[in-house]
Structures are given as C-alpha cells and as structure tokens.
Image 1 (tube, rainbow, N blue to C red):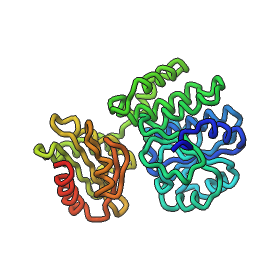
Image 2 (image 1 turned 90 degrees about the vertical axis):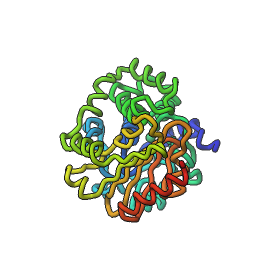
Image 3 (image 1 turned 45 degrees about the horizontal axis):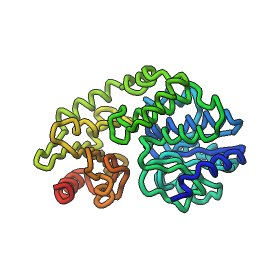
Length: 336
Ligand SMILES: [Mn+2]
C-alpha cells in the first residue's frame, strides 16, 4: 500500500503536468464535489489548467460551489469531457476506490486511457493497480480532509482562499454528518480551525447546504418518517423502502433522500438503518450503523456493495418487495 501514501510522487507528478483532469464518483455528494473543486482551485493557483468532470447530476444544495468554479458532467457533456481528457497529462480520482464507481460509460473511457492516475480517497479496498500513486486513508473523515493534507504538501502559501476553504468544509461537514460520525477526529477539527483562519465562514456554508431544501423534499421526509419507517426493536434495526411511484409523488430529485437514512439511528435502541429506493430499474440501498456494527461487510456479502464500517451502499435487481424481504432475512442472519 506504500504507493498509495506517496504524496511526494504526487507533488512531482503535478509539477510535471500542465493539464490536469479531476474525476469523482457517480451521484456526486458534498465530499465529491467539494474535494474536486477545492483541488481544482488550488492547482489553478499553481498555474495548472484543470478540468473537473463528474459522471452525472449532483444535488441542488451543492450549486453554490459549481456557480463559482466550473465543472463538466460526463453524461450530458461527453464530447467536452473527452477533449479535456485527451489533453490531460494527469488524472485525479477523488472520493472513490475503484474506477467502476464512475458508472459504466465513463469507466470504459477511463480504463482505456493511459494517462497516469492518482487517487485521493478514504474508501476501503482501493483498486491499487490502476494508480501510480495516491493519498489513501480509510481513517480520514472525508476526501476533503485528505485534499487539505495534499495541498499542504506543496509548501506554497495562499493555495487555499476562502472559497477553496468553503469547498473543503462542505466535504468535511457532509461526510461527517456535521462532525458526529466517529471518523471525526481531533485532526478533523484542527483542519477546520485552519480553514477558519484562512477565511472560511462556517455559517454561510452551513446555510448553503442545509437551509436550501425544496418544500417537496421536506414533505417527502415527513411522509417517510410518518408512513414508511419500519422498526424491528428485537433486531435493533429499522428500514425505509420507497417505490418509484412514491418518489414521483414528491417530484423526487437526486439528493432529496440524502441523509434520510440517518434518522432511524436517532431512535433509542436502533443500531442499524437501511433505506431502499426504486430508481432506474434497480433498488439502490444505503446502510448506516452505530459503533462496531459492520454494514460494510453486510453490504458486500448480501447486496453487491460496500463502503465504510458505519456507512455503506448496495443494490438489488429484485423488485422492491422482494428486496425488502431479502433485507429482513439477511439482516436477521447477519445482525441477529
Ligand atoms: Mn467521501
């Protein structure tokens, strides 16, 4: 794993490149967008030409970042994305462990491309052979925190302006559930303190991210908690299952259920939570847990997924009803 802790090789690669291409995972979240745009903004200050390409749409509550610093979306801007990749001398993979996380079409493009790739990420089991070097640490709270560390490696002042600091903070605050997940360390808070010294306005970022809901999103949340929450006290577990029809009723947009999976964990005695959503012909699943309870292995074993110890994703090609049954059965087997 030494090569994935090799920041000096990464710094050297940046110094030797003029055009740099930054990628992140499908359904980009706050950490994906925040760390990508922060890295872009810092590398531009080193005189680099930088393009960020995300696979597909991101939630509206991240728009304030994208309004300030451009990015391309592969599914709707494939041609421009390909042109940028052709010019690139270096590719960054941010906030994902294997190339398959960028989605099928973009994956095929990246696998075919011979530009050297660097990884900055905190997900388990990185696809080592694809990367020439990287900064990989599963204990980091977020990729944004690692991007902060990486920027320090250039030993150049003023690479982080208040906007860059806001992007990094956005990644940290969303990936740590506002500093409550146990991946939050003293180091996480120290990084944020540094960002505040550099001009970060935490209240402004918090407003942009958390006080920008649509009425539909809040009504969907009300419906989910009122009608769709199923609790199994004896298994210390709860789940939420949403059909396509239900999502449509609330004009569902990507990101609208972001964070909903965390609500059941606030119930006393509930240690595992799952949300299942019918989306694009498959069921997308998201798992959360408390303490030592390992949803990463659970997601890997039963639902073709993975992630972190306390936060993982998965999928199912069965119907929603069958998926719910299969989840209940496997959860009983694994957590019971
Ligand atoms: Mn992340």
